Each structure stands twice: as C-alpha cells, then as structure tokens.
Amino acid sequence: MSDAIESPCILVCSIDMATGFCHGCGRTRDEIGAWTLYSAEQRRRVMDTLPGRIATIEKKPRRETRRQRIARLKEQGES
View 1 (cartoon, rainbow, N blue to C red):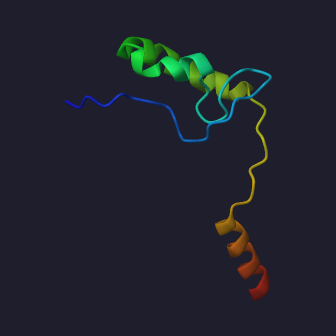
View 2 (view 1 turned 45 degrees about the horizontal axis):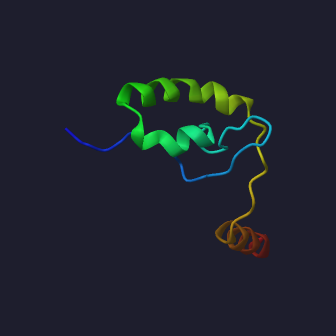
C-alpha cells in the first residue's frame, strides 16, 4: 500500500478572485495549505466537492505556449 497523499493538484495554481477557488484544482487557499495535514477522509470530502466548484469558476482563456505558437506558425507556413 502506498503512503502517497492523493491530491487533485494539476499544477495550474491560480486563485479565482470571485469564488476563491483554484482554477486548476478547485480548492481554496486554506485547503491547499492544510492538505497534507488532512486525514484521508477529509481530503476525500473536499475532493467530492471539486467538480461542482470548478464548474462555477469562470474559465480564463489559456495563454498560448511557446510550443503551441511554434506549431501554429509551422502549420501556417505549410498552408
């Protein structure tokens, strides 16, 4: 059995100012800070609420990454 702590983090750490939820995982700042202190049951309860929370966050348009820009420019050049 693994001792790894289950986490919803997807490394998109940005708090939505309207809701207080992280754009990536849906947790609050307090939940993120205390995550490793929570019991498995506490983490599970929070994780059960995350899909509903994330649905309430207004999605920010994604910034084009360097890799995406290079691929786009390459594709445009070939068109």
